[in-house]
Length: 373
Image (cartoon, rainbow, N blue to C red; front, side, top):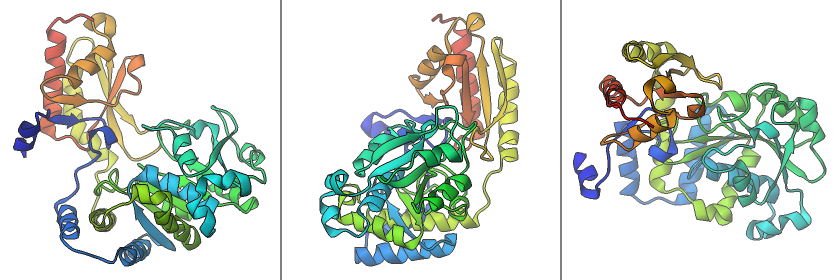
């Protein structure tokens, strides 16, 4: 609805950065939107809705239980609170007294202690936990993870994300073995991951996903896993979860989106390459630019267009290019994690061929304008 942009004075956006929270993440399918609308227009016994949709999702994913939460960050905080509070009624209402009486340390590989838009440690602290790092920024083995466990440890947390250090870090399966060795739960934050079964099957007790990223649901999150732990997460609706509750529309919308996600074919990396090839060819015809296909650093089947700017030749820093395209008449957002190296990436999953051409034209116009840094 272009009138929405006009009514509030908003700029139209080309999202070439992927499923990013700062741009509204994704655009759900029509039947998900219809399900959200149905949820908004009807009443439910909320505890029953939570339990029955969770059981339905669990049956789809082949796990013991599941619960819809407001977002993946809320999933981290509530999962941490769950493994600290367990079924203790007093602690449920007095969570941040936990350090005085129960184990509350959450062990995480040092290279997984990242800021994904907010710090992992903030969500752990919100859930009443204290983050304890294992290993080093450039390595964490199973032995190093195990060495960080003490009697004060409540759980092990593993972050599966492109933000994390990938080299010399143990796998989810290895982390699960360490957790079992110490009789501790393993929580896996897999917010943007595409495989909704792999990490549970790999031994995780709780797995957290964003509902709006790969699944393309409404703003929401999913916590799935072992029944005991999911039940403890559900109990947090009477604790810190009250401040991050998800509405009936989000619960129903995500449930429908998960069903769609499991049934419908996904765009493969090879299809992404086909889609971006004319765009890359056009960019490579521009003086001072080289473009190529690169693959997702976290191992997902996602291909992206990497654009390298010769800053001396174009007379602009890569940061200038990124800034000027963001602040143009149409806001164009790249993945800018390597802008300091003169590199940006284009994620084509949410971009039409017409929009890719608009990006090319905008880059060409910027370079031909002779603007200097």
